[in-house]
Image 1 (cartoon, rainbow, N blue to C red):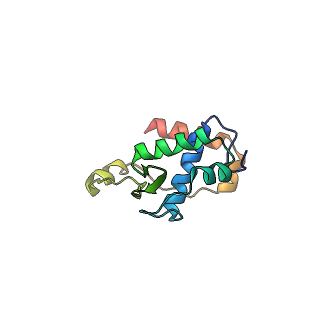
Image 2 (tube, rainbow, N blue to C red):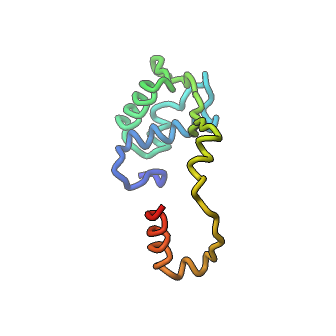
Image 3 (cartoon, rainbow, N blue to C red):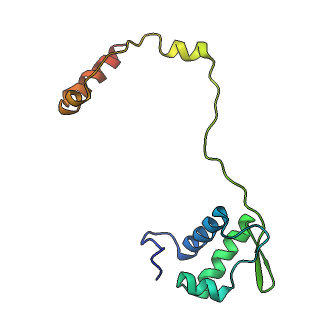
Length: 127
């Protein structure tokens, strides 16, 4: 087996699909270009033909690949942004922190004293 695979529980076809997806995301396989042949992918990933076929099927279902007879073409890549955007009015944010009082804490002392965390938890409960 290829060193690219983890010994986790994920199916080999899912792992192969993920590796191909990563190549598409990096631009190594560009939109409109042909994916290497089935035999080339079998050799590259050191897996069975059925595994590569299943991976291609998964990516085709996602809309990333388009099997066209003997060839498979990269159809698209939509970059997925991974961030969350939200809006909180300043008045609401300031009311959340109006009862807090900043304190200077020596991190080294706090790390050595496990009672510090219990002390802080008790102070939070008092508020």
